[in-house]
Image (cartoon, rainbow, N blue to C red; front, top):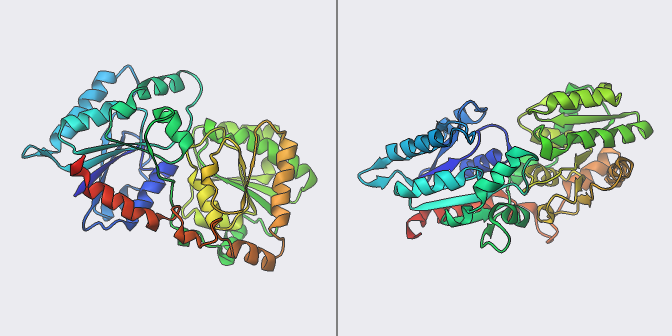
Length: 382
C-alpha cells in the first residue's frame, strides 16, 4: 500500500520533520510513503526517503496566475498513477492546505479512496499572500474526506470554527531528545560558548517566528547579563534582515546564526532556555522537542496551550514589553539550576503533566504510528 504525502518541500520544516518521524517508525513492509512537493525547493530528506523505499515527485509552484498550469500538472500526475482503473495510492494526505482544495478533488477524481486535509498552521502571512491562502481554503472542508488538525487553533483557522476535524498533535521521538550533558558540552565547545547563558531558538526565518522580537528580548537581557549568547538555529528568507537587525541593536557579537542543523536534538541540550515568541503557530514541533529535552521554554500566548504537556513551559502575551520577556527568560534559567548537577536533575527527570513518562503521551511518535496505520489501511471504507 502506498500513501502520497503532499508538502511544500522535503526540507527541514516542522511539518516535513513530523511526517518523516512517522515514516521512520511506520511498518514499511505494509505501508510506503511517496512525497509530492513544489519544484525548486529544498530536498534535505530526499535521499533518506529513497533509502526507506519512498519516491519524491514535484509540482510547479502555485502562483495564482498559473492556476490552469497547476491544475494540468495535478491531473497529469494523478492520471499517471492510475493502473487498471484504480489509483496507486490508498490515500492522499495533504499537509499543504493552501492548494489542497485544488489537488485533493483531483486525486478523488482519479480514484484515490481517501483524501485527507491536515491543518498545521493557525495563521497566514500578512498581505496579498495571506488573503489568497484564505480564499483558496474557504471550502476545503467540503473537498476532502477527512480533516486533521495539529491544534484547535489550526483547525479553526484552516477549516472554520465548528468544523469536524480530528485533533492529532505533532509528535516526536521522545528518546531522541533525552537530556545529554555530553552533547551539551560538544555544541558549546564547537561555538566557543563555555558556561555562558545560552538562549536558543529553532525555526525558519519567516514572519510567523517573530525573530525581530527575539532580538529585542535578548538585547534587554544582554544588558543585565553580558555573559550571555543567543543562538538561532534555522534558515529562511528573513535571515539577512534578522542579521541586520542584530547589528542595529549592537548585539551581533553575541548572536550565533547556525543555519539549518541536524541532528537538532544536540542544540536543545546546549540551550539554557528556549525563547519562542511566535505570532502564530499550528503546533510548533520545536516546543514539543524542547520539552522532551527538559528545556525551560518561554513562548507566546499566541501558541496553542495544547502544545504543553510538561511543567517546563511559560506562556506570555506579545503585548508585554521586551524587558518583561527578558525577565521571564532569566527566571526560567535560574529556576532550572545553574550547576551541572542541578541541571541534570531538572532536565533529566522531566515528566508529563499526567504524571507518566513522556513516551506514554500522544506527543510521542510511537503512540501515533498505530493511528496512522489503521487510518491508511481502512482507506477503502471512506
